[in-house]
Length: 266
Image (cartoon, rainbow, N blue to C red):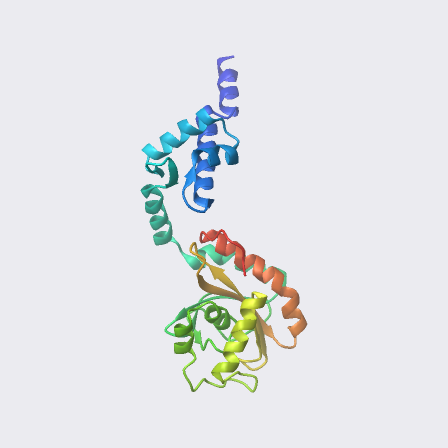
């Protein structure tokens, strides 16, 4: 009976675990609140009784997870900043993306790339290759110009204007007959990318290759990478690109969430 009793205790949620869940919910509410949050707001949003909320908030403040000012308004505490720093320090972008990119390859049947902007070029930091023998030439560690690649357009589209100007300094390389080489034409394309939320490369960088890319954002909302699907034109029509765009944006959004982004993808 003693053994059965112990099993029963383990199977039931411990009071401390329930308190932890409630405390974390309060931290989320404070983090999501626009500005410092008052006790009344937290009680209303959490559904907790006032005494329970006060007790949990006091524990969280003493632990440095939250802080409270002289007017009784709650904000995130210094401990959260330390956790955030550790999270960002240990973050491995390709490792975080690997299974998501494999999912995109399974959906599309084509090669998926992850790229970042480095010295005004697109640096490919990871690739999940198509099972097909014929596929795009880019590999992990290779580089391409940003103005004519889908990932590059995504990375440029949300940059400050002065950084876009630096990346579009003439002369822009003409890689194919479709390459946009006039800076103003590229800027118009970047406006279109921001509006639809993804970028297209319609045989603009590599002969016989089409590509679509979506932005990957970090915890601040900044676009830090682009995720793309690329394929030979005979397997990948412009309509195929557009049909794939929702899945591409969803998977890139899932990676953004892993990086701490909590907003809407745009």
